[in-house]
Length: 201
Image (cartoon, rainbow, N blue to C red; front, side, top):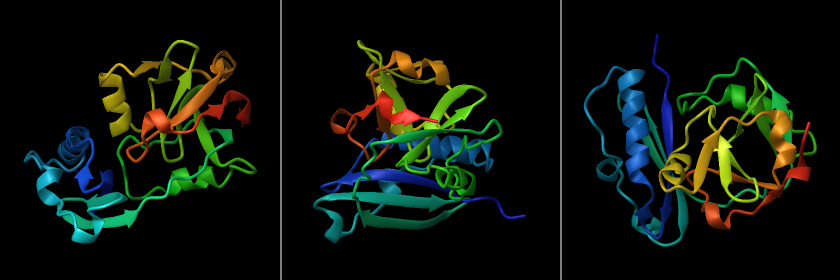
């Protein structure tokens, strides 16, 4: 049986790869735990940025298993997210960044009139379909302490004290005023706010 493939999606801005420390940590943790590989990879050494990608904002996508399968670059255009729909799934698992996102996409297809979904697992808020999420409580940004996938940007923002992890139940949403999505490609401070009134079942 072939091992599954995994991905790292890295922000490339004007030729500079962002947050590599956290991408390296996650990639090597995945390789050790899932693939039983103990040698350390450094993405900064593995990725060669093409000349045509030296200016502007690009998404660098590294696909790997036991070996690096592919490295792709594409111009990044952020999605406009204004409305979110809560979707329950008590069985979903996505604790490694698998290339196969079938289970997540099946939930995304249930978004109806919303732009994306927020997955509720056993009563707790986890993630959107393609990003972690954070909520403003009037004094600080908090993020679910049990995400489906511990994102690299989320990890950096927690280390910097920008985000505080805590248990967030679906019924707690009314205690917040707004939300922001968090992923490797988004600049958290300038990411548009989503009003809590625009998040519902």
